[in-house]
Image (cartoon, one colour):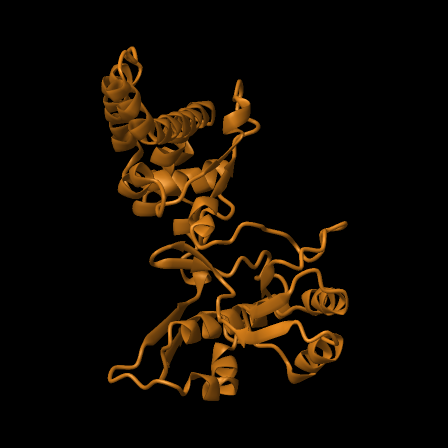
Length: 325
């Protein structure tokens, strides 16, 4: 969600491992950067790691607040003095889009502890944006469901590091105030993918699509690395079909040029220079043609055009007699 593997390789990060992975080799010539949520399980895994370190130095970053007792446990485990740094780096959320983040808390409406975690996550996300002097507006038709004011007040001193002339506004709306909108079928690209196929951390599982190839069983949709997706994610489905056609035509125009005979050193050089771009475009075309094709199949299979028409009549008109026929 933050970096692609090719981007992080450019930062000279060459190995990715989990603390709970078994049979990891010791590599004392490497330094380790650990980025963890400060959960009880992760702290215990880190304690075990520091007792038998596999790297020369450890730079430890927690995505949220860690208690003093947990820091003490890490210090006691670091008998070989391999820990170079411990910091709290408030990043306990997923940046889905440049203007949208998710805390990735499943079932937060059913469990009170999850609701408290939601309030904490929101407050710490604001803190990661270095904002202070927060003005909180809580609009709810269900009093007592969530008390973010208590969480904000409890952690207020953590916000007091940079004053802004105009304090940021956090507006919380109760979803139950509008129970109809979430029930309507969506017709923009990103929303349709989310509703009909499902998106988890920008990944889409297409393994159940009939006749899908192995390379396309799981695809990534990220506006940061996919120009077509960034330009079309909020467009209506009808416009997506037209833009897919234009993308295909552009790809077909470039394809013969890239596959011409290589008769000279200059031809070979041009091919090598253009091949990565051509391959990337080929992957983009295959991915979006597959996704849009599956969306189209599901729309037809579930009669979503007819269903959406009935939904709009129920939502926007007072007379529901025609919908009940």
